[in-house]
Image (cartoon, rainbow, N blue to C red; front, top):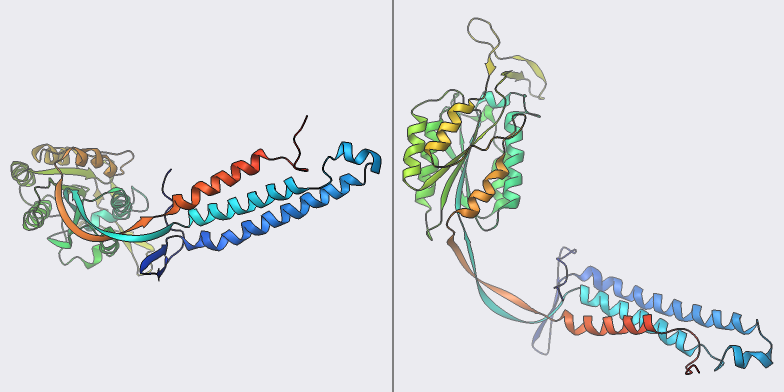
Length: 359
């Protein structure tokens, strides 16, 4: 038998009886249980009515032969078993727990720093709704699929800074992710080398448990400032793998200028008045990934293939990231579930009519 489903109700019910902690994990099913008893009672009444209608179809002389026993006892018992079985099944689904014990829970995984480009070129809309917003969506989906890994967030434009330190609280990481805005960046540009260096500092400062280390770089790869490939090579030599996920297309896209409401009012122009086109540097990012002993995560139509990093992370060495003493409750649902199944099987095997062996 498998454990009952995860909680559908926001809060579990707890009480103490004779010194034992009694807990109901999913109280919503407990509230449904009385409905099963009502169904059983309704079925019993319906069986009795059917039997009385059947009696009227025969004369008194033939009734004993056609309806042996003269009662609806088996139908009533069948309906009672059905109602009680369903009620017990709902009680089992509510997750009754009695007693508790403590366990040391260990969490193992890798350390991953996501370096996200927040320069103005990431506002280009060759990827919908924009390069930056698409990257945020993909990173958020990645966080939903991680299990036990610590994640940090580095944001960069003309300079790089830590947006979120290494953490296993993915909900908090998502909050920091949503707060990224190119307009809030103190310096314009795209300092990829600085972003990799900052990611390295985050990984080395928080290193523990012998966990594998990786950097996921999401950028369009434009405006390299510094020796990016050489920096990636140093990270690779230090045991930090660098994965590059290009965002955008190589065809080129103008950078939109928007008002406070997000409406496009024009496009960025250079000093000569020409519209600036931003193109993704696939070749440069491929070199960065190769030097960093990682992989280029190239998707379709300019979208980053962020999820492709998951198999690579699974291959890396897992380290013990944290150990916590937690309270575990003893599951008691089988004590109720097995009688429920027995009653339901008995109800299915019974017929209606009187208790009398057939010849």
